[in-house]
Amino acid sequence: MRVTIDEDGCVGAGQCVLAAPDVFDQRDEDGIVVLLDETPAPHLHDATREAAVLCPALAIHLAE
Amino acid sequence: MTDIGRVVVVGASAAGLTTAEALRREGFAGLITLVGDELHLPYDRPPLSKQVLLGTWEPERTAFRDDATYQRLEIGLRLGATATGVDLDARTVSLGSGDRVPYDRLVIATGVRPLRLKQGHELRGVHVLRTLDDTLALRAALAGSTSVAVVGAGFLGSEAAAAARTLGKEVTLVDLVPVPLSRQFGDELGGWIGDLHRDHGVTLRTGVGVRKLLGDEAVTGLELADGTTVTADVVLVAIGSKPATDWLAASGVPLDDGVLCDTTCQAVPGVYAAGDVARWHNERFGVSMRVEHRMNATEQGMAVAKNITGDPKPFTPIPYFWTDQFDARIQAYGIFPPDAKMTVAQGDPATRKLIAHYHHDGDLVGVLGWNMPRELRAARALLTRD
Image (cartoon, rainbow over all chains, first blue to last red; front, side, top):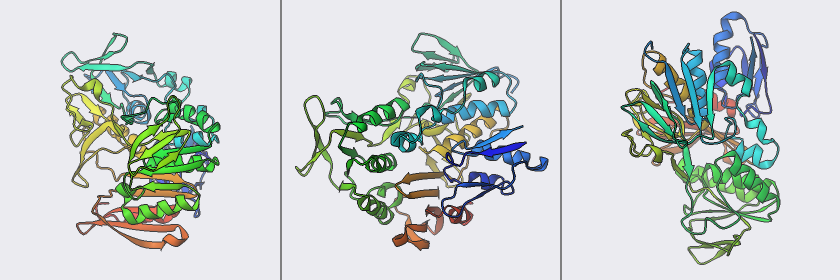
C-alpha cells in the first residue's frame, strides 16, 4: 500500500488522525495533514483505508 | 442479505455515493443504481462556497470519482433523472421519465433545497447557492459586480460573504437575527465571527429583516424592514433550506422535517435515509437530529450501508463540522443547543485562536476550535458522551 495526500484539498478535519494515528498527523498551525508513513505496514492497512474513506475532503489516496 | 438483489439510492451527492461505495466495500454484489437529478458526475459541495466561488478551483476538481471508477465498482448512474415517487408495496421508485426502478432496499439521500424569498426572487442578479450550476452562475455574476448583498448570516451566507469580500466586492451581510451564526454557536462566539467580517470590510446589517428586493428586471438592492436600503447588483439568498422530500409526500414514507428514521436510519422496512435529508434519533445525545454537514453525509452513508448488509446498529455519531471564512478555520464536535453555556477553555478570542466548551445540563456537549485544529481533536475526547 502506498499513501499519497492532497494537501491543497485537505480541510484539516483530523479524521485521519483519529482513524490511523500511526500514519497521519496534523500541522500545528492549520491542521493540514502530515503523512507520517507513505507505506504503512500491513497491520495498519485497515485503519489507513478507514482514514481514506472518512476524509471529508477526499484528500487521501491509496494505491494497493 | 441473501434476499437483497437491488439497492436503489436516490440522491447522487456525498451521502448517496458514500452509501453505494460502502455497500461494495461491505461485499454487496447485487445491483446498485444511483439516481441523481443533476447531469454532472457526483461532486462535493463544501468547496462550492469556498474554492470554486473564489475561482481557485475549477469546477471539475469537485467531482468525487471519474467514469472509470463507477464502472469498476459497478455503480449504475442515472443522472439527470428526477425521482417523483415511491411505491412501498410494489417496491419501485418512479422517475420523471415515467420509468419505474425496482428495489429491494431503497436509500433516500436527496438532501435539501434552498429556501427562496417570497418576493423579488425572480429578478436578474438574485442567486441561491446549492448546486455546482448555482455556484458557476454566482461566480459569473460576481465577476461583473461591484456590490453584493448576502441575505442570511448562517454558515453558507457568511462563507459566501467572505469569498465575495476576498474577491474585492463591497459586501453587505444581512440577517434578521442580531448576531451572525448565533443560532449555531450562541451570541458571544457569533459576535466574534461578526467582528471578523467587520475587520475584513464586510458591512453587517443584522437584527433587521428584508422588506423587499428592489429593481425592475435586474436587482438593484434591498429595502430593509427599518426603511433603509442596501445597494447591490448581486444578491445571494442564503436563508436556509428544507429537506427535499416533496417527491415522497404521497408515498407513506414518514416525514417530519426530513425523512423520519429510527435509530438505525431506517424509515420503514427496507427504506433508509442518509445525509442532509435524514432525521433520526441519536442515542448518544438522546435527541432527534438532522445534520446538514459534510462529515455526516459520509458517516451516515457508511452506517446505512452496514445496516443494509449486516446486523443493524444504532447510528450514534459525534457530529463534526467546519467552516472556513477569511483566515478563520472554525471546527466543531458535538451538539450546540441554543441554551448551552459557552466558555473559552484555551486560547483567546483577541488572538483568534481558541477552544470553546459548550455545557448543557452539566454535560460538556460541544467543543469548538478557532484556528486550533490539533487542540480541538484533543478536546473531542473531553466530551461527556465520548
